[in-house]
Amino acid sequence: MQVSDNAFDDWVRQYQRLLFGIAYWWTGSRSDAEELTQEAFFQAYRSRSTLRDIEAVKAWLVGILRHCYSQTRRKDRARDEVPLDEMADETGDRDLLAPDILALHQSLARLDEIHRLPVVMFYFQDLSYREISEALDLPIGTVMSRLSRARKILHLSLTTSHKLILVTKVKAR
Amino acid sequence: MSCELYRSEMYAWRPGSDTASYQALFEHLADCPECAQLFDRLACADERIRYTIQKFPEDRSLESRILARLAHQRTQTNDRRGSWRSWLLLPLAASVLLTMTVGIIPRLREARLSREIVTLLGTAPPAQINSSDQRQLLDWSAQVLPGFSNLPPELKKVEFRGATVLSVADHKAVLLQMKNERRASLLIVDALLTRKSGFTSVHEKSGSASLWSDGRRTYVLLFEGSVQEMHTYMVQMGIYT
Image 1 (cartoon, rainbow over the protein chains, first blue to last red):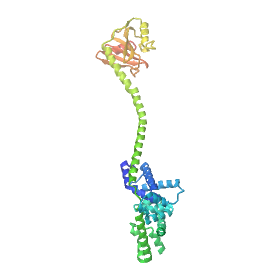
Image 2: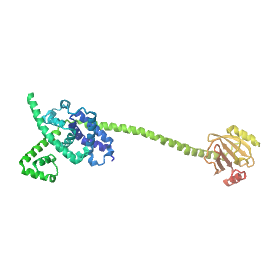
Image 3: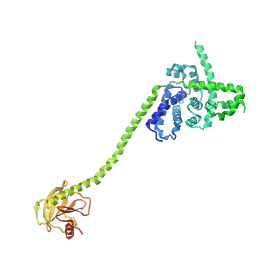
């Protein structure tokens, strides 16, 4: 499929926030997310002729982001957990120190990859089950069962994390 | 279906889902306060996560950085394409050169030769050497035309009475005047100015000419008369059968 440079630039404007957001919650790191987002767009630009359906561009881009993420993960297997302290330091955003955000980071970090990837896409609201299944290259039934499991874990984990964070804050005072 | 199964189904539901697919679940929620309470808690938690997940640090310069890098990448690709185009132009240039060599240049030479033949037909230069000795005239011509010793077979019958050295189309040439036909003369050019090995006849106001080549030199029979008269003379001398 022929994609003009202008059309591709429009996709960058339209979807860079989505890709960065997903990458941010996948990696837990702002700088990693920036790098992933940029790399995903460059890979997408290079392989833009492989896009079959222009309607599926969002899922296609997220699929490429997932591919880039997998490549990065392969290179850096040693890093299994999101470094929360490092994350808080590098953001410089006071809102990010809010308990909800810290708890979500912590809970997502506890999820294994097969659950973390779809659940982040799920809560982003922008992606349907079909788009998630296309982006992850998985059957829709697998995606739904993984999501169901991931949401259960996340809900449970968030309740625990909230309690932990609140206890930590009380102790700090 | 048990409450446990409905609770599993709750996790598959998301806002905006097809209600018909979850009709059984909603019917159960209407009848089961415990599951309904759990569903409300789940919906609240989902909403909180959805709200939280949207609060991530945004980098307003990321978009412009991606676009700038893409623009840079495109420039580099265009440059590479440009250099590839240059390489692709090489065969094109070579083919143009070949066409010039094979096609255009010989045509230009022939055109120039034709113009000079017209001039020679109009004003024939005086002989520099007059002799009825055939061998002497051929030896004299050989000084101008390197490697020239004998006439080609088709000219074996002709005899000359005088010769002139001249330049035709920037090439050395000898103009030999025929002994038995004052209207005829033979121009031998030390170059291939015609691609044809056979005879090509032309007629101008001042006379006619017939050109051919032996693969190395160009021969032109100049004749002050019509093409018909020239052909008759050529047949008579065994030049043209």
